[in-house]
Image (cartoon, rainbow, N blue to C red; front, side):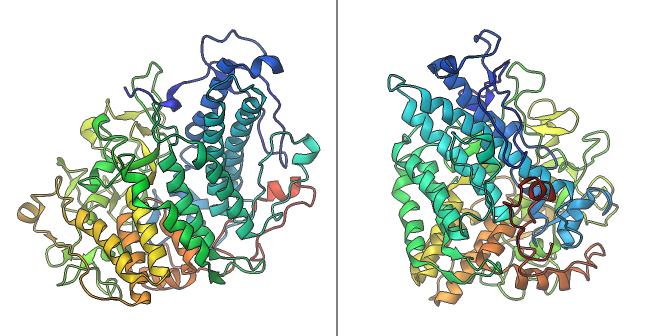
Length: 586
């Protein structure tokens, strides 16, 4: 059981504060309060009392775990299948066919159920946060935590809009809590330019940053460092300007925004609060209590077990990812499988560095090729132990490929849990679930974002120093695989960069390091779009990967269309002409 987790406080009593719909979208706000609150409908005056307000704040936190599910995970794994990191997986292309359509970028329609489902879930979360903000605004200054709780809610509202904006680009911003029904239904999704939208999110976070404390007693509440990490990411997205309304092309890279990235990624912000790199990257992806909320976890979705409810506050959103091991993880659906291209990317040359240009010419050979240790902490490969448990050696059988090899035999490791932990940290209900936290902002990501800004600003030496911090840690991440060279014949080899590099070279180095470090963490596709590289990278990926797998035969990336999802048809038709469809002739 995990203590001091704000997400764990489950609501049991309903009330009905003001909650309206945007484009007929939001659910009624039947939020939940703690057990001690008498059952019944609360008056507007009662809602503003501290005890009730605190529970509304808790309810706002809770929706970021309860509003997602296996088909619409806020981790975005379902949507990362558009990248060169992951295949959809499952049994056939018809198993989750709408996600196969995303994978091949064909048949992605505004009417597809998954396009609307994620939109609804995200805006339901934003609605819940706005309800809490409205209640907080109604309290008087005798409520000592008012300003801090408002800052926390602004952070959550920014997070909801951030997730939506990365998916759909042109979104309505629901920033006021006093909107009438008619106001909601006249919101526009193009009221702000792309840059103005990012600026709006940044403004909300900067207001939160000024107020949030350095530490929080409750795990899951954002701190000043969490706001800084979030601002680092937002300003990096903002820097790559895509403000031509007729395209999704990157038209410029803004220097002032890059300076903001440097400001909010300043290491002193994090080290002073006790954040830093884990000794071993794998510690970030272990479910045991002693590894959760470690030094690298700046802000994470908090899950729990044994908290008094039937299943606890478990993460069900990874329920489709577990492999189907007979009589062990029966019912595992085997989705989200690493690509051959990703595995090949972990190869290293005789200098111990990534093979930036020709890594994908030939497939990785475990007995012959050098590899970055992170490969074996990210991807389960045939002939090696699954989740480092030698009772489960992966092979080319249905246990490791529910599709019979259609999607290959690789398995993602970062989201999965050792089968030896079934009944404790891995629970079987309708699907498989784990109590392992999902880190949203981790320190390695901040370092790489800082490296990217330095590289884009022409500070190649500083960029490479930051990359080398990540690579030094990668080389030492062998606690789980120390015997792999002798026992399985793998060749672990990862060295630091030692030369002098041009601006272009350093940018490419940072991009590759982001892929290796954050592989299967659902950042890859969004990075490609942010950089303006999606068309070139994915076209090259499809051309080679079609030689390896048949389900990509029809895959084709269309620039100025496939970078973002279409605005859902349901939302367009309910918006009374106030929503504009994204470019791409949907």
